[in-house]
Length: 128
Image (cartoon, rainbow, N blue to C red):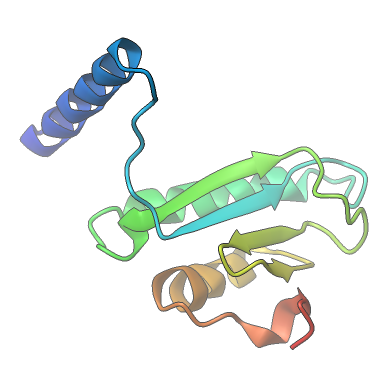
């Protein structure tokens, strides 16, 4: 384990310890939060799980990028659209994307999550 990894683990342990003893949990600051649907109503082939895992790996590979350090990711079993999935949504902008693939996720990571520019080609809500 490298020095950087140990430092990150120590910071995480301090935050967890502090949050247990305090009245509120501590969270690292973040700029954007992306949710990926991994449910099976809008895609029965587990493609949502694959897209989420790809996103997870992309963010890990780029963890030294200051813009991507401020991105949280979560998976959801249903985002309520249930068609043309996998679906993802990026907050705080509330931009919804459909038909997600690993290739599309790469562009969303670079353009939207990193640079703050939604990829209008795949936005279905709000309407571009």
